[in-house]
Image (cartoon, rainbow, N blue to C red; front, side, top):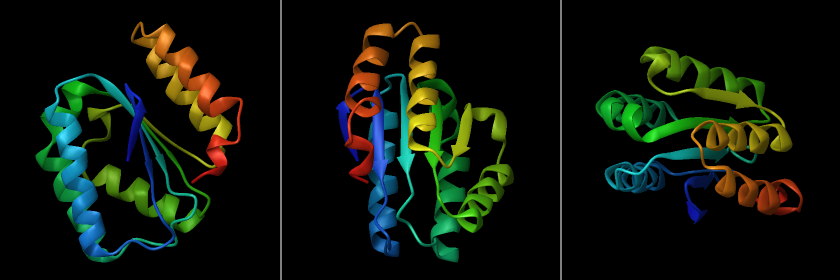
Length: 146
């Protein structure tokens, strides 16, 4: 997790994530929700091959348990996914809970995902933060890092 562009939280998944790493990621995600500061999440899953059934269940439970915090403090979540199968898994996971809790988008293009995140920041009146995110992630090779 990278919060250097806060209120953008940038999460990059490796090609393989263990169940323990996934639990740690959810604990860190909860930390950011408990800060009680509005933010946008940009989740980069372009390298991730798959999620285990346990990871999908952990994620679904997390989303249900943290629904109130997410609704209050998350301006939006955009996920970048290359794999159609993984994108379908994520969509199904989201629809198992209430999808209207937080605005979200699942995209295959890094520039489109950055643009979506920037739009969410601007919609919340955070134009200076949006400009900084666009400069750092939109006009450089930073998106290739993940």
